[in-house]
Image (tube, rainbow, N blue to C red; front, side, top):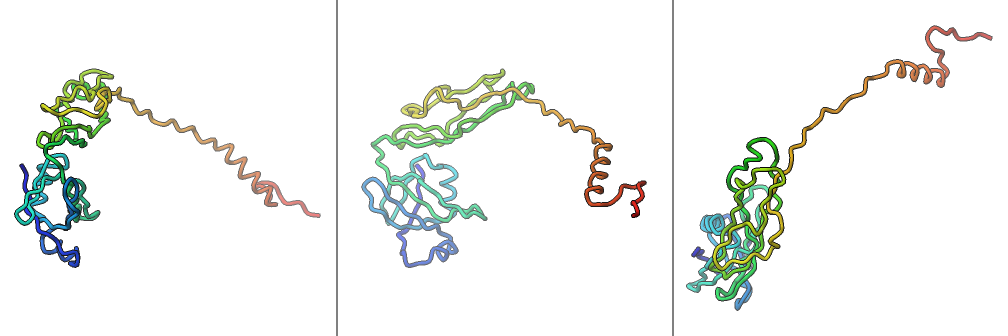
Length: 219
């Protein structure tokens, strides 16, 4: 089980001041818990976030009390990509919950290796239902099974841990192979120089300028 130590947060303190001190402002809410402002150590949170993701149960320890949560939402800085705020969702470990779990693609497709087709990844997440303690960090799609054109991996082909049920329709395609399409060079029509010359000549006549070789008439 992943554990993060947290402290209750004074809402009067500026968030930038907290972040500069090495902690991330956060909040938890959910089953049996009032919405509470907390802060978590930046380094510790990033490690748990990397290992647990947003689909594994985590314990947040606040003043000696363990609260079972999921990392529900993480706001990141658009420039540095560093986490700047976290929402934890309190959960009941005895009740099944529905979450979306990342799909990890592993292996080498024979169809891609031989050059007869391209791999198209259709789904990157699959919704599942399970007890919090049994939630997987991710699900694996073995693309080495994709050996021919039009071959595909369905949700029903993904191996699920014991006690985990897929909510996403089993016939939905996770990944497939499609034929490679050769890019043809665009044919450029040859330039008709005579047409350009005629166009220029006509323009001069419209402007009242005599074409070359035609002397202006004198009254």
